[in-house]
Amino acid sequence: MTGFGAFVFGDEILVGKRQDKHFPWLIEALGKRGLRLAWCEHLGDEPARVTQALKRTFATEDIVFCFGGIGATPDDHTRQCAAEALGVGLALHADAESEIRGRFGAETNAQRLKMGEFPVGAEIVPNPFNRIPGFALAHHYFVPGFPQMAWPMIEWVLEQKYRHLFDSQRWAEGSLIVYNLPESAVSPLMEELNRAFPGLKAFSLPSMGEGGSRRHIELGVRGAPAEISPAMKRLRTGVAQLGGRLDIPNT
Figure 1 (cartoon, rainbow, N blue to C red):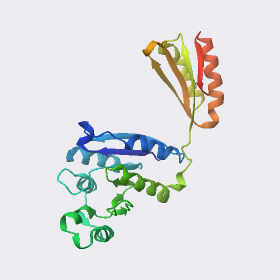
Figure 2: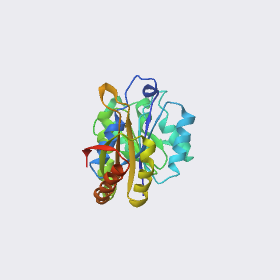
Figure 3: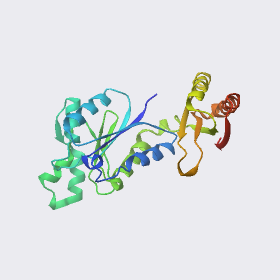
């Protein structure tokens, strides 16, 4: 099945000048449409690394959202890297030029028009905030790093391009809080659940007992909603057979 991925570009993220707000937002935006984020990567403003990363993902069927680096200052490399990754040139996109001229009018200049230079063959992604568009090609969608611009643009992409996928990845989760068992003891039970319920993935989240709480494991499954109930029944039985004590935070 096609996966959804994301790149967040910019040295400002890696050096701590800015916090990445796109990652949690994208999880929520996809989730409310019955979709899931398969992966997310943070990359700085190093052209060679960005180009290699894009070459890798252009070779897949993943739908990829790319945040940041599409301005016209010397530290913005994403447009150029995307073009190089695909082996094409950059050219001023006619629709982008129209939007930029519509935004700036008589104040349009060569530097501003650079923001409309996209890899040959790209389509624009409209920007309702200030009309400076992003671009799309090969199931990759490139938008600015500013959330007030990027997020409406990604919403537009999802609604206009991928409504046919909505609810295709909807999932549910159930879990137990397990006491008196180490992770090594529950690993065989997790493997059994993965075999018995192919639409689910078992997970284990241990706690070290900070703040006075007792050490425990949150043990559960997530995936196909129809398989959650029978898997949770087997999980409860398995924990009891292993001699664990449990609480039920989420079923």
